[in-house]
Length: 135
Image (cartoon, rainbow, N blue to C red; front, side, top):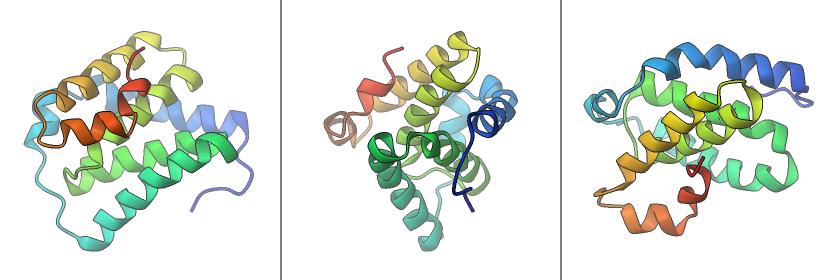
């Protein structure tokens, strides 16, 4: 459950708690993730991706919390078509709520490398994901 009124200190703390996981993530690791098969979890990932888009305008402090949740789900439950957008959302989260611009740039490049050649490449680009990962 997400807090109703996420404070800057809470969001920053949650973001920084993700840094150890994000420091070690590689393209190969993401590609080795088993496919996410639970339909409820797949729908949750899809919903959270849509939620981020809405929250960017109406509740920006929720974006980092959703991005963190999406990454955790992907790493625990497997790869879905929303894993790449999750990485893109995490890029912007790291950029705004941590002191680690280099890590944000690396995760952005990781997301971009996963988009290139992806069967959904055009769809991912059309959704504006590339805007997030140019850090």
